Image (cartoon, rainbow, N blue to C red; front, top):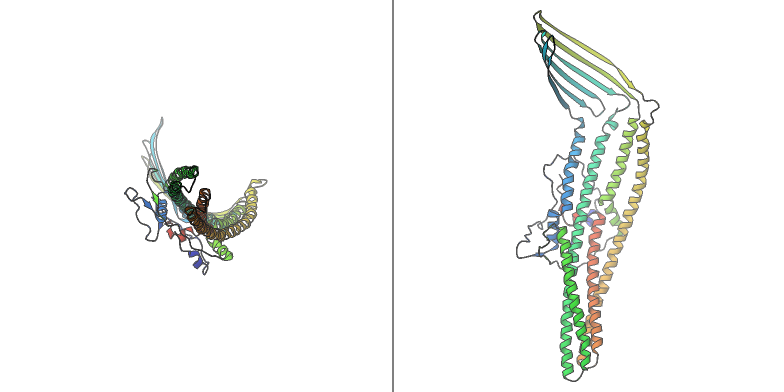
Length: 496
């Protein structure tokens, strides 16, 4: 099936970038789908088991186990991002205890409730507020009740201070989410390409079966001609053995072709996650049109679309942020601290009722200075090395991408020229065989020569079929290399 080439239009606008958004947790995994009308139900349980390439792609998107596993992983990955984005939201912790004490002089029951809330700002400021209530009921000492409010603020001056440092983990998580989305796109695109290639292998084996069956029919027709010539006394009787041997060879080829059809059918059914006993027949028309693309244009498209290359770019950004975090961890811990608390208590016993209320406040500086601890700089050393290594990886990834694009563009052109040559070879071999058959009927050729030309025609037809499949697969590989498989098939990832 020939598909449009949307990346050609994309050359006019190369501002594509992976989406950056915090996705909410999804209870059930999503699934990719076809945007076009090809997204129709395919009921293989019905008598009609014809399968087009579009049907195979649709079934693969719905059933393929690799794709389903990737979408299950996305649930955990999205929740990881949600946890990172929750860093600057208020946190509430509620703790409580209830305890019964029994002693030789008194027995008491004690209950404590302490809710605490905290908030981290994007500049490293930490705010906390806690309220504690305690209630004690003793047989002798009487009742004691207290509650208090505690407010605290900590502002880092070195370690953990500033927007760049505090938000670095969140930015790393968002970049990791972009990498995960690119990985999902690459996974789906590779799986779809495998399904397309497997489907064409089914087509190849079906066509090879047809070629061998046609060759068997021609061999049997030649056998009838031989019998007629022998009856007319124009051919020696022993020469018919050549034709009979050729018929046996063709029958053997038919059996092998049928076996290959079953092998490729099972391979495709496994990719589609269908019952291996499902009878399917590939019905896509094997046809091709020439596609021309400039190497430089293709390379520019790949630089903004190819998932693996984009992941390499994001890897460099992650390394830079990890260096920021590592350098911060090696700094001294110097912070301004301030706070206030209120305590109110009351005692009720036989001696009377006593209550009090008091306020306290404080302000100061807290310092932690590690001395002689090389482990504080260990992470920074590793992070610096990783930054430099990412530059090497990125340069290699760019060169590898350029080479892959060059190879696939060249291969596309080569496969088309091979297909044209193979098509001419089939036409000439068929004409050559027809002429030789006419000469045999007129007694001007030998049986051996006709059988030889029969073999040439079979070889030419198989060569044309292989060249056509190779060219179509080269188109699929071009889409995959440029990162345009999903766009060519109008597939929506539905990864919200």
